[in-house]
Length: 199
Image 1 (cartoon, rainbow, N blue to C red):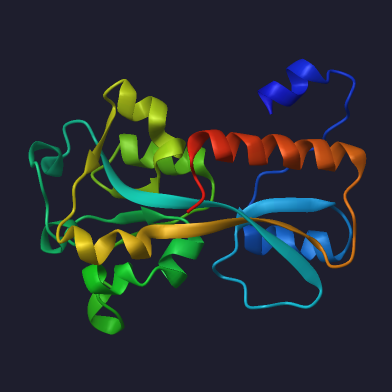
Image 2 (spheres, rainbow, N blue to C red):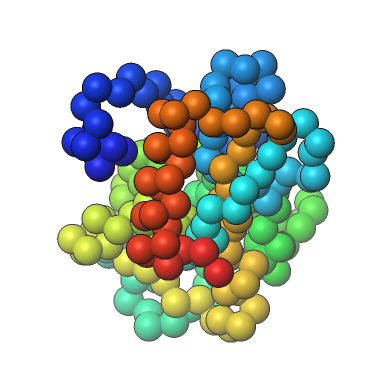
């Protein structure tokens, strides 16, 4: 967005940050032209067009000073004694979570804080012993400055693939982009290529 605003200061852009599940009805009602978000939770739909943009890998993070931060590796059994912070999509669709946190009534004592707003997720993680499940890019600054630490969860081979989420460009089927939307999409595709975010 900074790149777009800097190079094209004449554009009028209205940006809304929300979950894909909340943005889809706005798209169908033509309140927005397109959105970019996680589409793993969507079945095939004839009314929308979804173009793959990136594969975002999730990781577990804790605050500096968290009891788990002292370990080079942690196992699922160590994670379950702490509340989990995650977006709604992750709690509903990621197949790795039942392996760690269990399913059904026996698992209800493992706390969950479900939130799609990343600033709130980070604030809770930085001020509690909860474990945050999110993408590296969301918490890059906090990790670099030492406020958050990424956990290496083993066994890795069971966790890496299920923690990758599909991010797509979603628009109404049969519609073409406006010139402004086309510019935004091309810029985001370039950023994805530069950061090698698509498998």
